[in-house]
Length: 108
Image 1 (cartoon, rainbow, N blue to C red):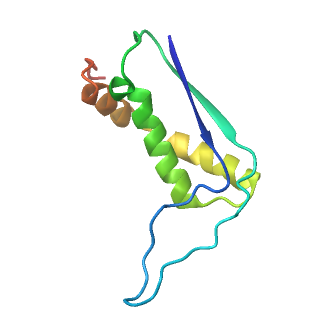
Image 2: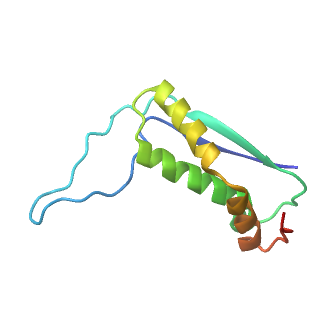
């Protein structure tokens, strides 16, 4: 079994913005990020190798992209957003990630 972890916090926001021409884009972002929330994921029967060939890294990427877009300001909002993000991961996503990482993923 392969186990991996990732961390999220209240300061997770998108790293880019838009503004009218000649104006500076800015955002109010909390200075203090607060405590990290750790997420743990597991995939069975994968041998040690480069993270580039680890399907769970693609999963973390999708979850964190959603959390940045949500911009949770409280831990209860963050917990709800984490649940929403995990529920967005579909069987099709998982099959695609395994295929992308050169693993055989039999069709359902």
